[in-house]
Length: 554
Image (cartoon, rainbow, N blue to C red; front, side, top):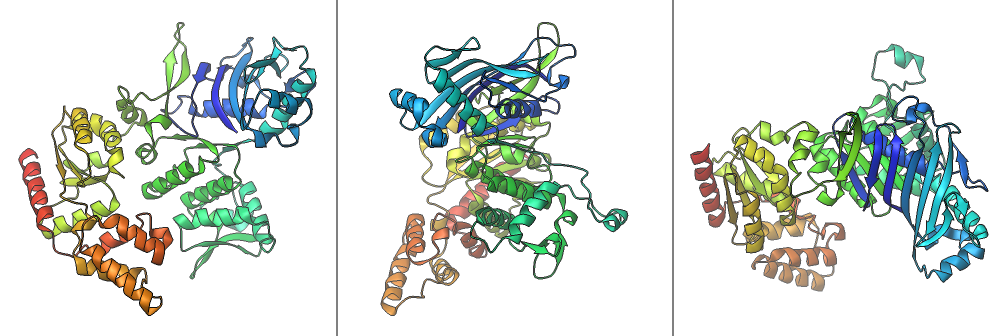
């Protein structure tokens, strides 16, 4: 299931909100009190407000605070387009409704558009319109003739499917331990919800049962962040343990607890997940990992996140970012608006909306942009050999993550670079196209910058013998029969003697080494192993040129 469009009016701080072209991952950025949480609440209230009733009405427990102002009389009106897959319908894909789906030619995807009113007096949802593809089933609160049976089956399906489809992750506060002595000790109080602890506790108590998929997913998620720990049940307590200590979860750091809480919710795989500020207690390095977790999960869980963090925005695709802000109506009242970011003219709003400058800008005089982590590691090390200070407060290295994201980085940093008159230096491998460099120059035209291309990739600059020895020992490549080991040696020697090493090394590791490292995962360990090697002449010339350029400007 995917929510493809959503509109609502007269809800909390929202007067009239329209979100079209909703993607799989949606990042809401806005100042405090801009209404980000209200948008998530609106989606949850609408989708979870379905209860089956023959007249297509649903009672609700909403209170007056759901309306934007006191003494409101107009209804809350909500319209959404929801994409279902035929497999979602299960047993409902039969009878009159099944025949109708067949006639419409719906092979895999089924679009449902529904418009509902929430009456202020009755506190009851009523269905004004219901469409299945382009076929109108309910119109002006009445079932269209000849669709009575299909309409009831479709509405029953929506009620049963939607009410459990949405999960909003609330990071709770003020939850205390049940142990009185712990509370009296003055130590840290737990922030992870008791319900989360109980769920994980139940899983660990049935770990010998075959149905342990959730616990497995939870463990894999958590171990990516804290590889030295595992989750165990110790008597009545759920604990994080390593080879030295075992600590009840409610005594560990807030960031650890938050990550555990989010891991649990991801492992349950709801149709739609909404998370408020998932990075609030998390170190920026872990926040970047966390963003990638949510990005990967969005392939099977439609995800809505709110954030104030550059750690998320820095990695997000521009198409995934929604700008939330308060705007004035004709009467001077402030209401929440939400729209997708326009990369051509609104990227600078990210900086002002987040309320901070990217952290590097406050601690450095210039910036060096490199393609990824392996480039940063080795360039820093080689520069240190030449006494070139590529570290704050002189120069700070910023990773682009890939050359494909260079324009995104430039657009994101452009307001800061221009505001602080900060010089930049951009370093690319040899396969960066001239056309892309020209586009980058246009973005940076109002700032001081230099762009350089290496004569070959960083990996092709490493000396042959240390490269060969590292790959052989690190990935235990010579563990086969003698004939095969000779083949590996010959192939690897040929690889290190030539340029364009990356695809060949990927192939060798996929076939004889660690397949998990074959997708460029070997680059960072290799860069660390090459840090003390002699600086190649071509790199030395570029680094000296970089130093002269920055010295002249700063």
